[in-house]
Image (cartoon, rainbow, N blue to C red; front, side, top):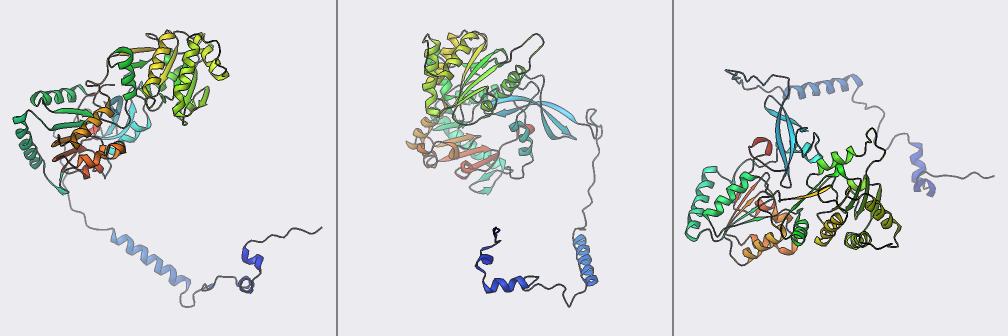
Length: 456
């Protein structure tokens, strides 16, 4: 029997003459076993000398500095022992109660606050990573005017001149664009400014927002309301493309409450059950007992089919949906339907209707006044601002946080119309695309180095 023959390279297979000669050479061309002009001891001496010179280059003289001691050392600061401060981490306008661990006045770690209802002692990856942005060397540090470093006094003087001129026309052409604001203090300050300038307007926009939920609540209840979910009370949960364990407001609390029902207590023999309809894999989908991938555009069709079955239709012809409906009906008052923020308002309306039909209102879901002092449908608010800029109705725009030049929908052509505003000011942690379009860039303080308030 003839054995199979193998080749390591195409050259070996081709059996070129050059390849055969190369097999006779132990080392590649140009490489010798030992340099004739340099012995081993001489080589080691040169290496040692180079290392010594490298060490000497770092021995630069240091300028002597005097350490000013505490006249009266703070009682709570003990070298080597951490000190914890209760604070709130802002994300999407909502606050997460955390504890900031600090050493000698410098924050070093973020932990959950067990006494805060929004965190219950836990955090998420965003809160943990927020400590890095505090020490980020790329953070904005100076005021910039027209691409050049300026001063705070120069900015205040320029802004005061603009605002003084605005008093003559009651703030006509003055606009504020902020991210989602839930801080009562910030909202009060903006309202007082609007009282002094009645013709001015305040807009809010974030690329990930609750516009669909806002529109659905207005349709269902005639006003804006927020839904508060009691995940710990639900035996059966249906997620309609809602990643409520990772990205929705209150997701840290939802995750803790959901996990508590995954551990059976004495006398209990049933855990909660999670059904997920989603278009892309998510953390919530990974935890689902029954997950069904569905195109985002088909979520409404599936939700309608489920709602019809809950309304009395005997069978949908879909075994997955029929099993889900039976589970929901067997857990009346202890079930929960959650719609994702990226879904259309009609899906949210169906979720409200299904929760009502299942008797969940007041049990696993309750409706409260909006957490935001000034709730708006943010995309429509941004569209209105863009139209005003296009029509030349805005000549002083203050952008407080965010990066709308980058995050605004492309079809709005926000950057194009933004450039028409006569005076543009941007307050942010970083100099970004919006800063490049502004006359003034003001560095924003980090939440760990500023005082304020925020709602959860």
